[in-house]
Image (cartoon, rainbow, N blue to C red):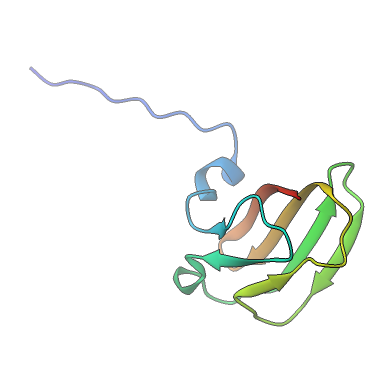
Length: 93
């Protein structure tokens, strides 16, 4: 007898969400990107407010992101690469 396993995703962002993470979360002055060595052709890093407004953008690779200039609040860290986009929600303390 065979069993069937069904896996459902609501979108590509959910599928890719396990590729990278940030540490610590929640961060205060900076955070480190964990798992970035798995990715190729990183195009950009972006931080957006919870309303979607871009508050920071970088086009160069860095495994540590400085967020000391951001106000406390909820943000999205968005990273574009050859396989898609990673989105990680974080709260700056």
